[in-house]
Image 1 (tube, rainbow, N blue to C red):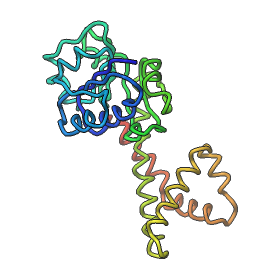
Image 2 (cartoon, helix red, strand yellow):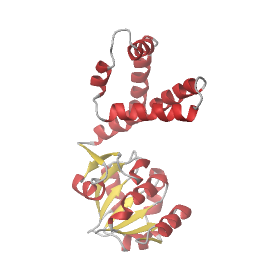
Image 3 (cartoon, rainbow, N blue to C red):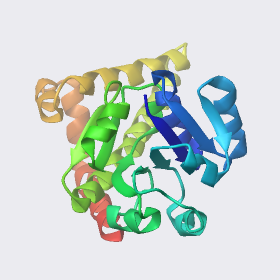
Image 4 (cartoon, one colour):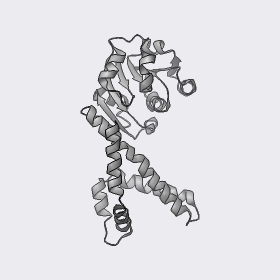
Length: 244
């Protein structure tokens, strides 16, 4: 059991708390995003709400769920302890920067989770103390421990593929829905098909398995490749990387 404090209770930080609230930890969340904080405390008996300094005073592990541009203003007046370990959820803020914000506490890790962490079964990109992150979240999720900030930046760019994939599924579902009696079932079929197909098979192997000459999958993929989908994807990823 750990004493965990959470500063900031936005969407992702709230999902993080939900993901570990059933594991027996003592969790204190800050009053920021008061509605989310109150909902967590009302749902879980081991979650309480306090002011920012009281959160730190009650915690050995601190999770920062702040917006990066607000962190210095919020954390500046607070007193951290040297025996505390800090996990940052702030994208775009390196471990060295976090260390400067939380001294004398140890900036242990950067962790970039997804909302699915609330239920488990989701990937977690992280940099730093993989043992700490694994102890908290590894039983229910897959931890991807990266070697440096450059890798973390690359993974952060690459994860943006989720939105284009979701758009393709949504557009396909709309096309299908206009042709079948139950559009909702049609979209559910497509979501499950894509998720299950990729879950247990490497992408290149799946493409090869679906490459039957003249088959529906091959014909649609080749049409989209000929229409420039791959160069457009690479260009978009390069632009994200150059802007990060």
